Image (cartoon, rainbow, N blue to C red; front, side, top):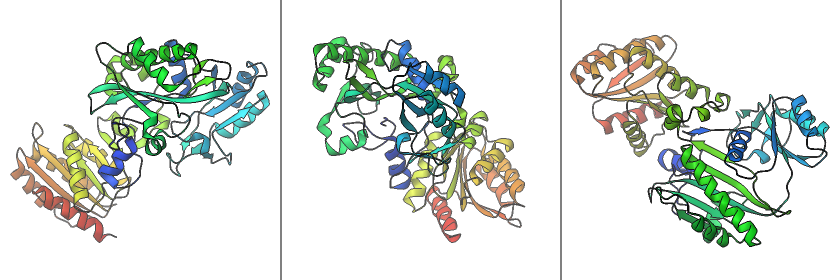
Amino acid sequence: MISSMGLKPLGGLRTRASMASTMLRGGPGAAQKRFLSIHEYLSMDLLNKYGIATPRSIPAKSPEEAFKAAQSFGGKGMVIKAQVLAGGRGKGHFDSGLQGGVHLIKTPEEARDYASKMIGNKLITKQTGEAGRICNAVMLAEARPPAHEYYVALLNDRASQLPVLIASNQGGMSIEDVAAENPDAIITTPIDFEKGLEQSKALEIAKKLGFSSEKQEKQAADTFVKLYKLFKEKDATQVEINPMAESKDGEVLCMDAKLGFDDNAVEFRQPDIAELRDPTQEDADEVEAGKKGLNFIKLDGDIGCLVNGAGLAMATMDVVKLNGGNPANFLDIGGGADAEAMKLAFKLLLSAKPKALFVNVFGGIVSSGKVAESLVEAAKSIADDVNIDIVARLRGNQEADAKKVIEGFGSSSGVKIHPVFDLDEAAQLAVKLAAARG
């Protein structure tokens, strides 16, 4: 799956996983998604509303619903897919013991049996880690054997500052692998935001992909144009079809779909999309943080970072990395640095069991003195239960007052606050304190 949010080149584009690894870890990893993703069955429904052809599909939220849905296919072959927001479902396994989240089936009885082993159980894939992710529904789709599979995606490209359509005649596999092994197989087409994707350009792309006849080329071109219309009108950050297939009966179909949407736009401009969110597929701490107006993303380091402002948060993580440490999170408290927000922030930070905390706040609208008071109050609330060092860099408005407040806290409890006002020195100390705890 590709996205303009990352840093690894892919024909001018970049992957989200490599963003996290380049900026935060230096190795392969998966960052939490910061846009709204929806289940495949909902994506298919949205495609159909835009007149985009897909195999017929029906969701089911219980084994009995799966049985009844399968009956409606009239004895034709079907595919049953676990509805979990994670890639690699087919190669994953359930904590129920079932291998694979995607299976070919023939009968309603098989649909019920597989659904009983999927629904209510956790699917574990490379993307979910060992914690897995709960499966609350399955999707039954008619089996439409492909004659050839293609890859198509729409997303925003930072390099060109335009939407782009990515297409390849090597679909049904990891696009990152295709990019690495055969970059010439990927066609990247910038799209003029005002003009949109013109039919002539879409047909030109379809011809390059090598469909079997003019009929299929036109179907593919029509699909590209409709996908872009959906992408633009619904404030999508990503529309990924893998695979798009030319079926053996001569139809061009979107066989699978992953759609992502801009959270900020969805909140006020796309209420119908906002209703499709499934919080059970998201990290519980991140959901709780969002309800309180905090921006929180879990990472895999050991230094908890609490910052106000997204730019300062990114800079803080960078300076921690530059000094040999690893951030445990991205946590932007914005302007809500009162005592209650600080207590919730500490709760979120400590859930990852960090070895040190780094508080880096610049006082502007919110004074550093007030932030220091909130910080001390939050520290007192955890002092009896936690033993941890907090490096506090509070600069800007009323920073002298902030220093006095922090120095007055002392270190008689299990929590010690270290006031450091140089950014690099603060990061070095945080890394040193974390290392000292092994």
